[in-house]
Length: 190
Image (cartoon, rainbow, N blue to C red; front, side):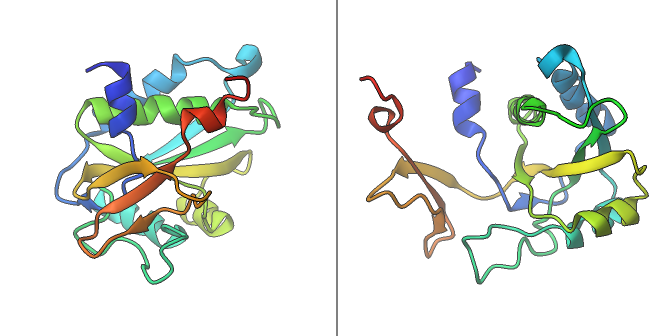
């Protein structure tokens, strides 16, 4: 699959077929792609907590907030929840500043997941202290965000942004609409 096709399929999915498992080996392969990606100053300060088992997934789920613009939706129901998570953190013993490493690494992970037929969602609205304690993550690791992974069961469509309204929304058929700015708005010297 061409890179642009992978990017087009790499949407923020929030509903999954929870019965489709993602193996530990697959998750490690996704993280290996992040490991091989560029890192500011080559410091490589990111660390990952992985979860692909029902019990550990159940510990992570309550710490996450889903789809802030969908005020009446509390998140995926049982059966539609992610089958795996990657908790991305920075090792403060290596560096207090992670620059843009977490974005590069997460994009690499998600593109790897999409290539294998999965999808994901980057979640930054986290009860970090609660999650840190629940998972017994070492003190030197600061949680940055969580990547939810699974086999998507929802349709996400990109559409042209109208009137500057960038908020995503769902229609009555539960299709998730994501407005995007046009290239002419992004390039300042066209």
